[in-house]
Length: 332
Image (cartoon, rainbow, N blue to C red; front, side, top):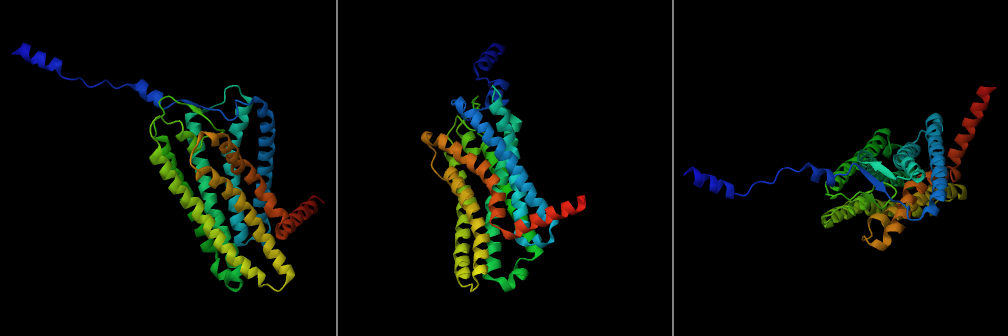
């Protein structure tokens, strides 16, 4: 009887022992950011462009934040949202550009797993927030130009805070969802990211399983955060153009077009490149183009935003002059 029991037990299939090596292979300790490492002659020009862009981004956006806070004439909803945008651009570029600069100068172009996760989460959260914040700014311009007599009633302080908070909370909530779904995909030891930084499309290409569901979910979220806001912006500007054309004063019409033109330039640069990146079907031929496009909305646009808003805006230029004059008076 004992021999029969032993025989039957020995013939039963045994559970495969837990294999930690398989887990470790699926989750790498670090990622290699390829960027344009196959074109080493590009590294020096890219380093110079990235460094100059980053310095200008920091200086320009900090200047807007400081001037908007110190000049009482800029304590309006428009500049409240512009301050939010400048702070967002500061954080966005800081989450990616310093690591890019380090990798360009290094032979081993690596980023730790934790660093990649942080970069993915922060850049995705801030990018999503900017999508909604630009739509909120267009609503502010719509209220200012199309409903000037009721503007102060419509855009009261509480509503401005609620709209800004809703943009930030929605952006970070989307990042939690997208980052979690992306990081759950098994990588099976793959760790070469064909990009400059950790971004959802680049990480999905590393997965060793079917990513159709993730790509469909990414497309749906991109429609919510890109196409719907840009559609609302275009509708609001259709009403704004009609209202501006009814303004009798040439000076008033020029001022309205100047302020709205600045916002439209920013909208075109940001949404145009982001839609190209996230709403086109993935293909091997579009990899290099995707890298350049992501650099545009990740580095060039945040750098240009302060200059676009200041060079075409008399209020901001006047605030800068008053601030400089105040500084010289204090020194004297």
